[in-house]
Image (cartoon, rainbow, N blue to C red):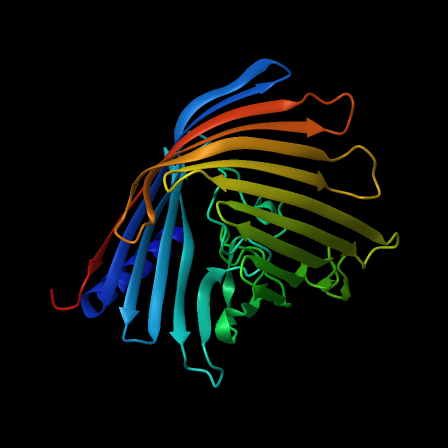
Length: 353
């Protein structure tokens, strides 16, 4: 079914290319990973960790699409490579009675915390992605826009809630909703936050006799993200706090789990080609349980070998060394060295050429 769906989408996109200005873009991540646990080498590999193929057709001045295929080395070693559809949406600009607004429909970004504009300054994922708060993209629709005079931005969206790795495999009767706000009161300082309501599994199911009963697997989530960024000259600091309440209301012993994550990302831009960075994450999967979390420390640099005409990165090397320290005394700490070569190229095909 997934292969059929992919063929249909690619066919539609191909026809779109013939009738619209289209931007083609490819990005590849070649990575070497060296991992040790308690001093023992557990991984020493080179792999294509991620590859993106993107099409951005433009239908006039106010309608623009995006279609992304995400491919990667198959970790199971069965097929050689894995393939997922990451984006498939249309943007309708300035078509709502709200100035500087945009309506998006399809497999789109999840506007929560920093996951929707995370640019992988570190090789490690965005905190919301790494600690499984939300999926980076999901099927849905939403309205985004900007406040006047560069004061900030907003987003309101509704999603299936299953993410992009499944297709109609984990959907219930409730849509999931998110609201996001970013404000820049003065130059160099940005603050904001997100709130998301999410459910998993329907509230009722049929028993063996066909009678509707409470679903004991029902899960309800309430998630909050707080974001702050400070930038002055070559230095910037991004801080983020994440909180997730998980409830299982339809069981006799009411279960509630509170999960938190705190992340700091300082970056010092030495020059246009070289950045020094660090990152410190504190993760607690259950605040009521002692010694179940861990901290992650990252240090590294990004070296930009080549940029395009707009000064965007085109070819660069990322080097990260990170240590994971568990709170439990009997746990073995982990260390990992990653060196990644990222390269990006793009081309625009104009209609009629």
